[in-house]
Amino acid sequence: MSGTMRQGATAPSRSAAPAAAAADRDAGVVAWVRAHRPMADALGFALLAVAFAALGMVGLWTVFSALPEPVSPWWSLATALPACALVLQRDRAPMALLWVSLALLVVDLVTVGGIVTLIVVLDLLYAATVAASPARRRRILAGIAVAVAAIGVAALAAADDIRIALLMSLQLGALAGMDYWYATSVAQAHELVALHRERAEDAERLAARDRDEAVRREREQMARELHDLVAGHVSAIAIRAEAALSVEATAGSDRAALHAVRDSSLEAHQALRSMISVLRTGDGMIAAPRRDALPALVDDARRHGLTVTLDDALPSGIPSPVDQAVTRIVQESLANCVRHAAGADVEVVLDAVAQGVRVRVDSRGGSAVTHPPIRGSGWGLELLRERARALGGRLDAEPTDAGWSVRATIPLEVAA
Image (cartoon, rainbow, N blue to C red; front, side, top):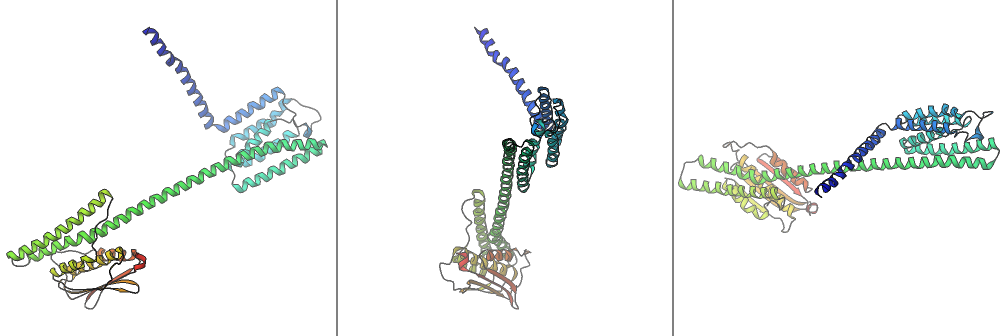
């Protein structure tokens, strides 16, 4: 029984092998025909012409024949075979070859009256219509109408019978019309596919551009936050450490300097943790200082040796983006005064104007910090300008006779 089962198990595999081989042969034949379609069509038309000649299938258009008496059916190959040869170059110049095939068809109609020449004309008509533009397709349709009408008139003149003329016109009109309709449908399908492909490519390019723009905006935002939150604290640590090293060491001054360094380090650490959390999870927002942090910023600037006065006349309840932008402007302006105008008198004025919110930070006197050598890049003011422009406002920073001035105006309506 086991031997029988084994034989039964191997029987399907033995029968499957010839089927697989036959499928491979069929696939190979199909692949060859697709790769050599014009040659295969021309060969098929030629064999069909030989078969029709052998069967004597000629003289179908005797109404147009100009021969005094019937001739051998093999004479139909005189026009059929040259017409078949035209198919070999069908993909290169279908419209020009269509005109040549029409000339051969006219010769065939007035002589033997075969079939294959007409089949080749319809094949080239299909190829020319598929390859034509919409405007040229309309001209081809008009040409078909003219040709069908001419055939009807010629048949009426040759047979002197309206029924034969109508029958000839209907036959050729149906064949050419169906051929044209199918070719137009294929051409429109190709155009629709090309349109969808173009739209898909455009959508892909737009999506890539949007992704790049989103990445750029995120990088700019991270650059602003790094500069505003971290760079200021790190430079403050360096300045405070340098200040402690530049005076005579005492227990009180050392502890005060260490306290200041510790506070700035903790603030920088907290800012970095907040940014890392946003980058890792993609959730939440980086905590940005608000106007209620202005007194602490002013006190911190005073500990660095600045003489700061704050006049905050802004109303409560201003939009959050404006509130944060005002705080950032004051923070960066004070940090610049610490680095570039140590010991200066600084006046901070915040008030409401017709255009929105106005910020003014003026410094007088002071001197630049040379130790430690903290080099400015100019990014701070440029980032503040970008922040103000993003809210529809404007920021100007320029030297004055007494020192430096930063002025900004931010509209409330745009930000809201």
